Image 1 (cartoon, rainbow, N blue to C red):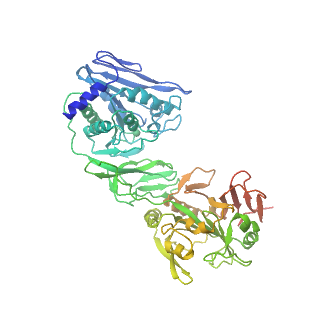
Image 2 (tube, protein in one colour):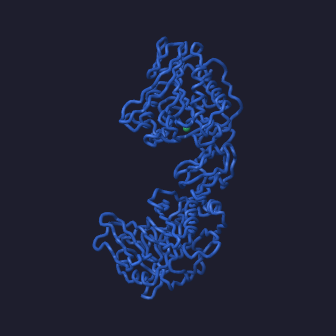
Image 3 (cartoon, rainbow, N blue to C red):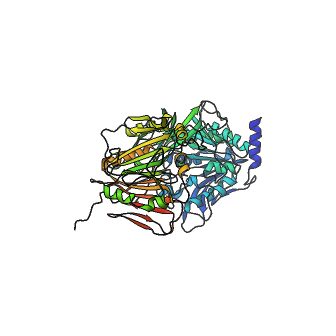
Length: 638
Ligand SMILES: [Zn+2]
């Protein structure tokens, strides 16, 4: 009974071509009982966009109007070839309603064989809906599909497969939170009728632009499904048969084609899915296959640079099934490597709770050991403590350092610098840099250990450091993850820490504090004065040996840093509020430059000469400064 009522609704909702008249899409005009080919133009804009090839198959009897679309991504050939064949097979004289087939929705991408993006504007068509009539070519195609297809039909089937570079395990997706619940119900029925082994309900946010085809049609009151079957720029007869059979079942379920629509087998359902993105430019070797079940923390593959050095070893963020995986070498920051889904045997009523993820890391502080002259000139610079930052000799009293001090703590709002002289108490050699990253959320440090261990292929230890406080004895200070070095490192140490609340309780016994605030500001906040300039460290440039540069990049990538474009031979990585610029050199100079953000634009002197080319330099119109170091600078031969 319900099925009959749904069918009745669809018949009543048909918006075009009343009984006995022709159905028209662009130049394709089909009278009842006829099939017509033609083109749907993409008007407007400066650049010509080829019209979209469409076939209109108008049933002899009235019924719903159904759009079948392929080629939203031009290198997805299973959909394009299936619809080419189906357009010839459907029999208008025995059909009810109308099927409009968009054979190749993204003609520029198809003709120029691009993956993901349109060749003219490098935009992903399935991310720009509802489109823009006066936008770029890709945006104009989206606009035409929204208004000339979605707005004129009763149901949409958007057929995809893995893109030209992706292998995929078949699934059908539908929007499970359509603004109109009856649209969700009709979409779900279409998805079930298709008969894919996996069904993926989606819960998009309808607050902003709808971006995707199915979300756009759904938001406009039109039930829709997205089919994914095949990939890797191939199309086997078996795949064409399976997709065609699924589409025919959907057309039967909608009442367009006569016959029963029983789907083969019972599908599994995706409760949560996520794409693991590439953090870097590089060459990817997949370590998993579509449909494979992987455990949380398992290696998904490996990304190397052109020289064969490993840059990243992505890991599964949760236990799930591989929905698709990139199978050709090129990968770029922010593009998917693997899509992973959690699956269950019953259709979930709502999305699963997001699995816990690795926390972002921030710069807690860094230290650098300076040559004697460089250290002396900074210690003698009154401005350092007189306006730039708090300068002290360390915990627990934050005393003003005296003239023989071999350590200066330079503290800003969000981070601090630990400047060491050659006679420092830690015995660290001149030129050595130590980078202390930290997590801001209590109890999250250990989540980084697995990815770090997998990425580095090395032991990673979590240690607890304590500190003596007068009258309290040993107090837990911080936990930290350290990579086990193969030999003591004289150029660069990196660790990640998490403060422990007991430490702040001991350090600031008289101040109000939150038991769970383990952030950088829990340390620096009580010392901070807004009239001082230093806010944060935003950029650090380092020159390292090729070997150390490479492991440093791997460490940062494993901690969530992402490669960004940079000039020349600099490898740049962006993380939470901090950019690293790493350069390789046979005789590396270590720390080259540090970029600061300030609480305001500095007035008065803008350059402080620190000798031997080193300087502290302030922008005249931006709240920014940079510290240029001269340590180990190679001098031109006279
Ligand atoms: Zn696609």
